[in-house]
Image 1 (cartoon, helix red, strand yellow):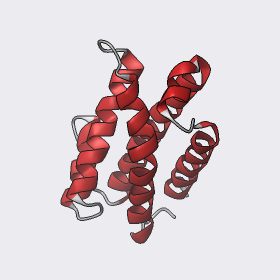
Image 2: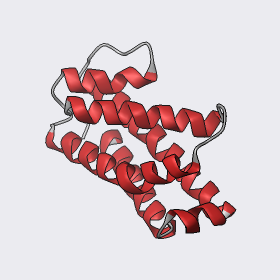
Image 3: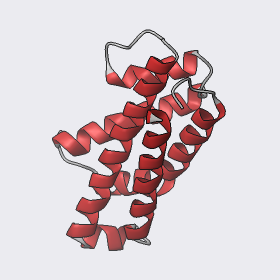
Length: 138
C-alpha cells in the first residue's frame, strides 16, 4: 500500500496547492504568505515525488541511484515514465533545492511559472504513468 499512499499524498498536496494558488504573478508576488505557502507546497510535492520514485524502484528491485535526482532517470530507462518527463522532474528537483536552500536570489516569476504552468501537469503525468504499472506492494 505504500506506493498508493504516496500517490494519495501527492494528490492531496496538489489539491491544497491549487486551492491557494494566486491567479497571476502580481497577486503571488504581493502576498508574502501565499508565496511562502506555494513554495512550501512545491517543496513537499517534489519531495513526495522523489519518495514515490524510490518506492517504485525498490518495489521493482532496481538498483538504487547514488543521487536523488537520478531516480527519474532510472524510471525513464525502465520505460515507466518518458524521458521528457524525467528531465522535467529533475529540473523541478533543482528548483526545489534552490527554494529550500535559498541558493542565490530566487527568481519569483520563474518559481510562479513552475508552480502554475508545469508542476501540476508534470505531477499528473507522473502519477498517471506510475498507476499504469503493477506494483508488487499494492
